[in-house]
Image 1 (cartoon, helix red, strand yellow):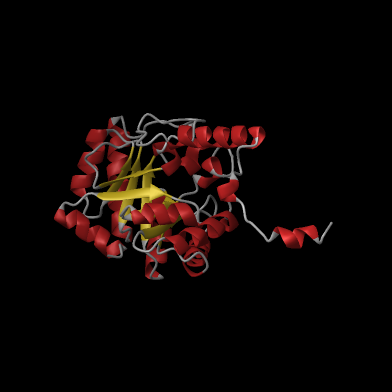
Image 2 (cartoon, rainbow, N blue to C red):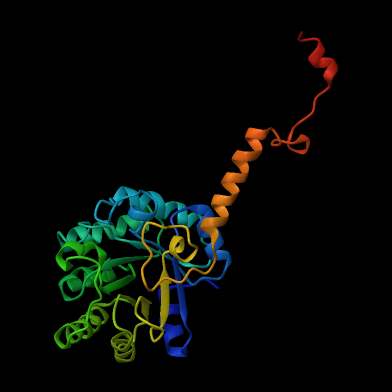
Length: 275
């Protein structure tokens, strides 16, 4: 069954947990979709795990469109959500609607995600009025990393916790169909989940959220530059890839690959005429 913004809300009403993973290309999207994951996030995390940037701030609309189009071609049932990159929506409501529209029209995403709370509610409301589903994102918002002074857990103090709850309620009121809670204490994330009607998708926010999201390279052990505390490696794909690459190199160098079964034959009498 095709997953949509509507089925996300229905899942929360039924108490069914939601799953979300990132993907940035056609072949990975097909694998994630085939596993039955409810949603694929084309995250601006591609800046770090695909393009080698130190953070997400350098990712452009062109980057997001390029990768979103590839993922959309590979996803059949998963809800494809595209991140709105840094400065594609903060500048004005007009810019936010135009760029969200590009991700839907050109990128073939089915929803967009943007970071921030009350300050981006006008953008969320306008994008939703343009018939584009919006997933909000509060807590640790990587595009605000310089303002936060690093990757830090958000909402630990009384005022900060109250602010996060109010932001969750604000993005819900603005029309978001779901909200990502990143690096939020488990108890606070559970409280927020209970206080709002839209699904919460946690990443470093505990098991009390309505769903979870991870960067697929993290959960497959493929990205060794930095592993957050909240990541569990579900399969050691990175190490298996390294072993495969090393085995390929060894066999090529020793001449055992390609073997006869990997080659094509021809009538040798034809070949003799070429000498």
